[in-house]
Image (cartoon, rainbow over all chains, first blue to last red; front, side, top):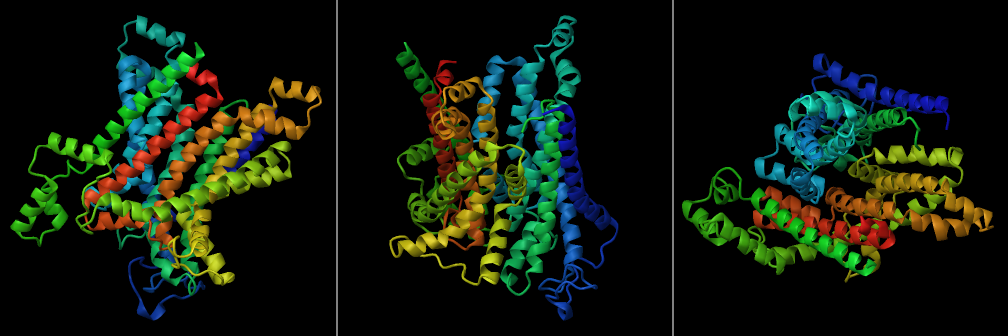
Amino acid sequence: MNKNSVSARSKRFYIIGLILLSVVVIAFLVSLFWTPYDPYTTDAASKLLPPSAAHPFGTDNFGRDVLSRVMCAAKFTVFISVAGVSIALILGTVTGLPAGYFGGLTDRFIMFINNSIMCFPGILLALVAVAVFGASMFNVVWALGLVFAPTYARVYRSGTIEIKEYDYITHARVMGIRPGRIMIMHILPNLVPQLLPATVIGLANMTLFESGMSYLGLGVQPPDASFGKMLAESQAYIRVAPWLVIFPSMMLVFYILGLYFVSEGMRVSFTKGGGS
Amino acid sequence: MTGRQTALYVFRKVFELIATLLLVSLFTFLAFSVIPGDTARIMLGANATEEQVEALRTDLGLDKPLAVRYITWLGGAFTGDLGNSTQFRTGVAGLIASRLPVTLGMSILAFIMIVAISYPLAILSSRRPGKLADQICSVLGHVLFAIPPFVLSLLLILIFGSILKNFTIGNYVAPNVDFGIYLQSLLLPAFAIALPKIAMTFKFLRSSIIEQKASDYVATAKSHGLSDIKIMFRHILPNSNVSSITIISLVLSDILGGSLIVEQVFNLPGLGRLLLSAISQRDFPLLSGIVFYLALVTVLLYFAADIFSSLSDPRIRLS
């Protein structure tokens, strides 16, 4: 594949991804200042109304405006994924960089613990943490951060092992710069091409987890809206009010798919060969 | 020489397996022991009397030191005795076993679907990479991969239930009562779990086949006049075994995690529902039993994947 078609391919991924993402992000940004209706006010007179000009996404079984609730849910989804991935990235830095840089026993010890954590199905670990410490948004964020940390630790470690062999690192070491500084100032910035796609995929995967947990009632707690919880509540009305299922699913999938496409675009443009 | 190296490799892997299992069991045990506050009090809630709390504490052995409790629990876990559920008042191991027909059956069905669909698609798609069929498969794969399994389940219920009107949920029947209806009730949930994994397996398999196709031995085989089908099944697929084994082991552990949620959508009495009731009733013996069991299955899966990979590619056990 020649260079032109690679950049055309990655551009296509970026464009589709960013369009999908912007739908959700705009909903999230606007919801901070304005929603068409109050997302929490119930209205017995307008229960289960189909989509119309007054309620573009219809209303739910409590007469709440679905569009307003979807916008509100976008806010929590974006916030939880960004906060959770940030925690995972920090934990990954603290464990993965030293493991790769020092090697030997440090590496073995850290990676052994890492691999053992990865033996638990991820969603299970997050569910248990929430079960033990209580279901709240704060607990969901750190539990998911913890579950995703080993994945990032692996990315950091393998990148560090490669980069630490470069001459400029040897130079820095000979100059007497301390390991901590070398890792943060000289190795970390060079890991960005690998970390960026991994971060974007992490946002998507974390949203998959969070929506599942919210669906089970162990994520975002009512009355706050989340896509998972909205879908769980709408299941009883799936035949009479399919819009209750369709719109939250659509937004949720837009967010995850948008992130996947952007990360795919990054992967194609960062790996110069293009890949397939 | 090779025999000794193989033995050494297996020995090392078994040692790793035991160490991992010990650490996993320690994690599981500690997760339910480091709960801030009085575990027995948390389990019973604020309304329980002091005598009830005291009784549960003795019952669970919470009055003994941590290390003693761990050894007791571990010994029990490896002999199939995971303690008693505080909620159902029966053995945890028996409870888990009673829910396995659902979760296991669903996982196996999903796995069969994944292999049966992703392999032919990957072979077809890699015949002419970049052409229409390939592009349709790739885009569809991306989209399917982005839909959470429980959303897929809801959409499937919507499609099969509202539009085709031939599917009602919640009609689970135990396999020994009517095996046909049992399978039927698991078909749609299994499909919902399988779809995103089909997309994932397809993607990895496709790129692995394309990579193999570009290698010299394929050109040689072609110049010897071997047919495309023969090259595919005799040479390319065996050579992409290692990456497919890795992917399959990942997929299998994901299936287990995914089934916990999808069961809930289809109202199936599997491990997922048991787990949720353990969480909501704060039934910690049952909860730790389920967690340990699922982790055990995952560890064994990865172990089996390592052994199989080394069998199909000797380079792994020599390095």
